Length: 145
Picture 1 (cartoon, rainbow, N blue to C red):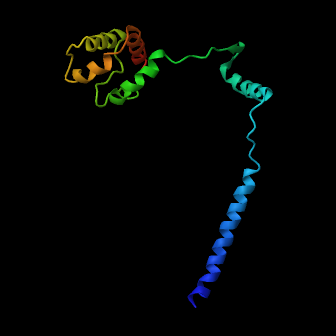
Picture 2 (tube, rainbow, N blue to C red):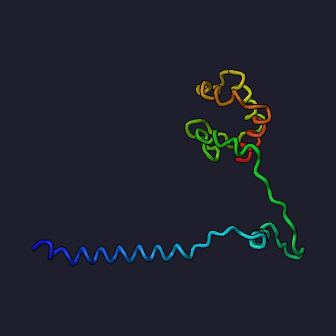
């Protein structure tokens, strides 16, 4: 008796699920997984290129060179965990607004194992493997924050 009362619900559920599966299988046929041709790649590049061209009033079109990220930006990713993505501080002190000389001097001090403040122990390990180029790159990037 209970089987017959549930039968229409089970049948309806089976039909709905079956239709959904058929719809999904049908959608899979329309997916185009072929690689892009050279012409398609060039068309995409031509759509992107205008974003590097600026029209200045009265001057016509001026080609603007793309600005590369500063080398210290990628290196700062580790620093941002304590000093914040914008250098505003957090667990570590704020770095934004400091000079290149200040940041580079502090990093050199930490690298040499000098005690600069209460968190020097943490910074010794962070600065230990930095090259002079790394220190300069980081200091120049921090200046931009």
